[in-house]
Image (cartoon, rainbow over all chains, first blue to last red; front, side):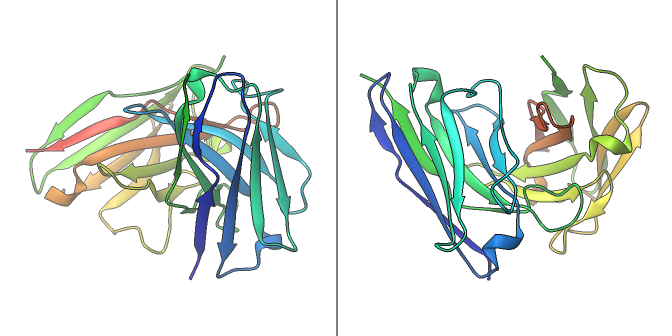
Length: 120
Length: 111
């Protein structure tokens, strides 16, 4: 079955960096677009970034442009999110998600999420 | 900046029917926005329900349906069950510059 497991979250000071990972199993990773979505405490969902099955193209939301970088290693079945210049407003649960393979279905399968807290 | 707007909250009686809507600040929602709908219960991971306006995932209960209604994307729940109480989010596609934008969510209460 499709499994997505995030890791790498935790507490970081404002201005710091963190690298999230998403290890996948149960499907051929190199065939699917992948995304990161976040949810601040008590708030709604925000799409953060996505990457094609080959690694290009990739897109970021305006709120993280220039600070976050999405990447993938198809040989290692892993998705990454490098987060630099972190701000308090980046505090959220971060989810990785996979598309379904159908047109217009970018977020069919979700991981359990990982909490990132930006605070001094 | 593109804004996607949903009703903040709705209430429905068990067994009833309710329609949630999703509007775009750029104008009418069309099939080209590939509207998606997600359900999130408290403390749980969001679950995909509908993609490309009106297509169901294999796990989507039959009582959920998607459509375009009056220039908006719509999610209709028919024969609402108590377990349908949740937050519902829509997601719209806007092309290469900022591909996907979530709505603010609708809190559905079954009472």
